[in-house]
Image (cartoon, rainbow, N blue to C red; front, side):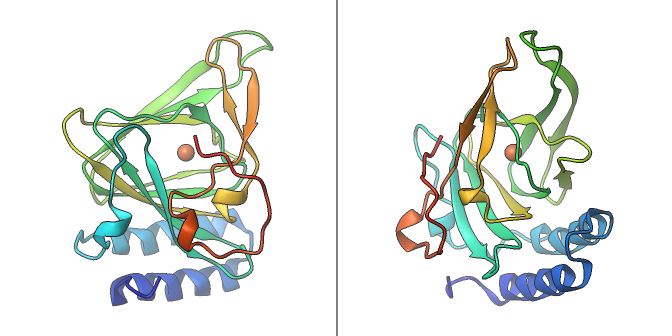
Length: 201
Ligand code: FE
């Protein structure tokens, strides 16, 4: 991953230092992490083209950095025109920094078993904006490209090796969950020790 710029390397140094200090304390990690990620997405001149490539059918998740102890990972999320995720959770904290274009994020709450999922808030993210998700405050959402005619890109930081984390997608009508492991769109160049099975949505 050495084609990533000095700006990104500085971001990784700062974020590693934060994790060293804050450990798993989200009350420290999330506000301080937002400041560090804001500095990274304040300029859109550093992400190499290879990590900004959309796929005609599927949104892409390129691994940019994996902490050697799996304490955090950083990915670029690339949306082709009109692409969206299913409703999903994360099971770890996450920060979402908008780099290019825009996203529409809809939050959901689990209702009674077998009942439709409840929408509980939505945001539109524009370049430079940083949002967070957390299993403590709510981490179930559906995200879509705000645009039907252009690519959007956000940079995400997660409290684990997100492509290897076992999490869930949800059926909007019944709330029924189905486990999945996302993997990475650049699996070929990713080297990690985890042997979890992969299924890219
Ligand atoms: Fe998400």
